[in-house]
Structures are given as C-alpha cells and as structure tokens.
Length: 86
Image (tube, rainbow, N blue to C red; front, side, top):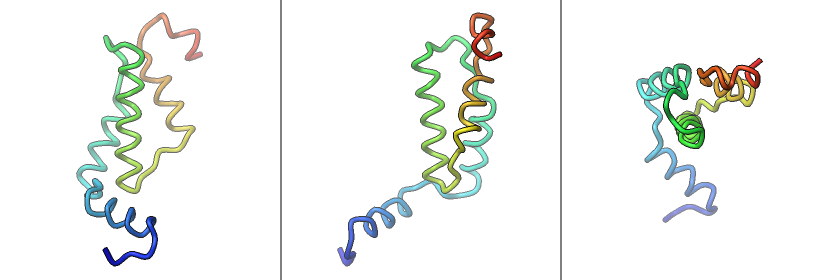
C-alpha cells in the first residue's frame, strides 16, 4: 500500500473516512451540548454521548474529560438524578 507503518496507514484511512468537514463538527458539537437523557435508558444515553464524542474525536475536535463529565451530568434532566448532579 506504500506505507511503512500501520500508523501511517491508519492515519490515511482516518483521513479518507473521517468526518472532518466543518458542518459535521458544528452539528456534532451542537448535538453533544444539547443531548438530554429524557426517556432513554441510561445505557442508551451514555452510548449516544459516546457516539458524539467519538465522532468529534475522529473529526479532530476531541472532547475534554471535564466537558464530557459536565455534559453527562447536565443531560440528566430527571429529578431522580438531582442528588448525583449536585
């Protein structure tokens, strides 16, 4: 394939199939910042958050751990989670 290391190959694959255009980054950030648990089960909510975080990382805009924790807690919009959020 013309690459000396698996990292070089992986970087090319990521660039070819990654979601790097600006509109996708804006979309993923907006979805990440506005995602609420709502009627989702906790596992579904965390998978949705992980999918957005993974997409942002692939797009070259990784989410910090502080932002991730903050958004997960902010998205817990039910009264049953208030003690944990506080």
